[in-house]
Length: 107
Image 1: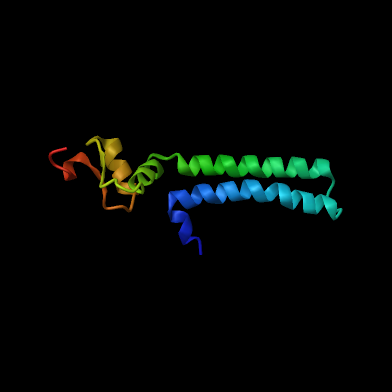
Image 2: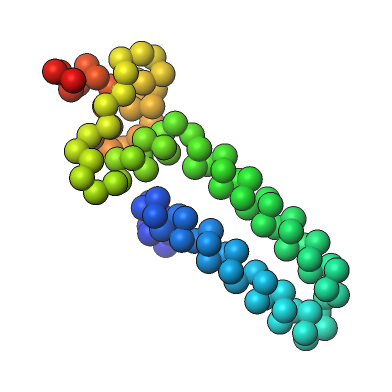
């Protein structure tokens, strides 16, 4: 169902869409009398901040950043250093082009 979210560009598009839809939804909810303006401002603020925080935690992991770089057109491989951290990042990503330097000799 959410296969389109595997592309990092679509993930950013989803967050931008949510930021645009919430004010319109709020206007409708307030206009129909389901909530006061103050309650909607508070609820949407909490919702947006919570979603942004969750998105930040998920997207700013080293593996997520390596996947973003790997998805850029023209990038043939993401070569990580041969440290334990580099190997850990390579182990958490499913892309065959994100590898520690030992798998890319001559780099």
